[in-house]
Length: 209
Image (tube, rainbow, N blue to C red; front, side, top):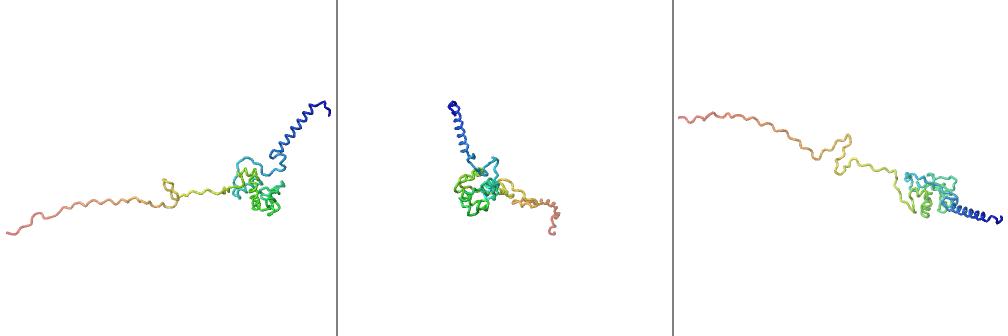
């Protein structure tokens, strides 16, 4: 190319520099082209979190539901296996080969055993989106109670402070009162009428003359 168009060459060079900078920025972003294979379960719909999965070996049942839909035999061909979606290198590096060649070929308890080792080493960052979904952080977790446990029923015979006792169930006689009311005695009969005396009408006769 001749030197008759130096301004054009300068503009072309500036455009090339801009394109290179933009490409470098895209590659540095999370989930960009540098991330050749995104982890499954990274999506979060932002809706209300369902904790019913906490009854299934919290928190691993919930993480598995988020990662694989709770399918501990998951093998979709994306390079991640089992309920907790282990990559092969992670599975091998944390002793998974002691159980099975891949995570999806191991039992649920064996997958959880390997996951506990990963958690102790890497923390919940090994499952970034799903751990955020359930509020998990650090390298430990607090066991959750079973969310399906019913609340205790109130005692129907309990008496609240200062209130009246509860009514007895239908068909059950009421308990006798501690202080029964006195029964009034029968009214006294009228006094008998007075009877007139029939004594002597006068003095008896004296000695004779």
